[in-house]
Length: 359
Ligand SMILES: O=C(O)c1ccc[n+]([C@@H]2O[C@H](COP(=O)([O-])O)[C@@H](O)[C@H]2O)c1
Ligand SMILES: Cc1cc2nc[nH]c2cc1C
Figure (cartoon, rainbow, N blue to C red):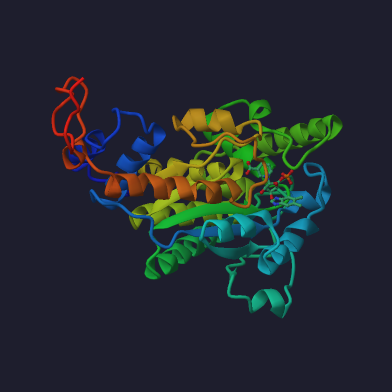
């Protein structure tokens, strides 16, 4: 069973944060982050070491029907090539913030060229060439679902072996906002209509079809837990993220969660091991309808609200500097005592370097 980080350092961490040269609480959410990092890493001097971002790509059987997605399924594979060539938003943000990027084929419907297969960015974890259409049966078999969870876990072990202690998650999969909504509705009991959003940008008419299709899928697959939700609705990229998140928490690594789909993977992980939440930083609240409700359901507060709805891990990559800043202020900032700065209620003349000038 996954355990919550040991809380015995909590008071010492709070004390350290509160004695920094600033009014108490004035670094806002960065203070919560510093405390969380200290607890995860079990130290008063946390650090973000070799942060990595994994983009999990997978295809969805339902996407071939066009019932839930405005873009064709082929875009998933095309974007994988774009990631490998360095041209996607996530490439730009990872370069900008010095984050190591890996592109994981979790089950894309494509036989890739050597340009992709031989790239150092590429990781082949393909389970199958996409999930099955969940209107015709479960998206994956129990064995496939377990394989996805296991592959996600072993990838994180490999990352940790390189010294990485912070792993950010992103995904690419045409059709996956519907899988995420189905996972959310089935595990939270929140009405499906509040979980389904416009994804990459469906029109009003397409939204009606998307909702009706998802409602059919939900009625076909009564699920009792996270594992069954992943198996019923997919996709491989979501299940692989779930396995990777669970292992990251077991390994004592910090998890950075991106948008709606990544949060659905976390929801499934949370259903299996609730303590996973203590290891998670929520990067942003996506524009996708449903994400706000999902974050509220988990009682978590995201760092940013920028109306992003791209996925790929873009929001997660954007907050890495904030996570670094939280660790850095805790380690580097002077305390009131170090700096000779007076605290509230203290004699104003106490401890200043140099002479006070008489009025
Ligand atoms: O991360 C999000 O919150 C998010 C919100 C909307 C769309 N997406 C991305 O859009 C794709 C899925 O959209 P759709 O319309 O095909 O279901 C998938 O590749 C996601 O990465 C991502
Ligand atoms: C172009 C494009 C890029 C994406 N990145 C993540 N999801 C995406 C969906 C589309 C359609």
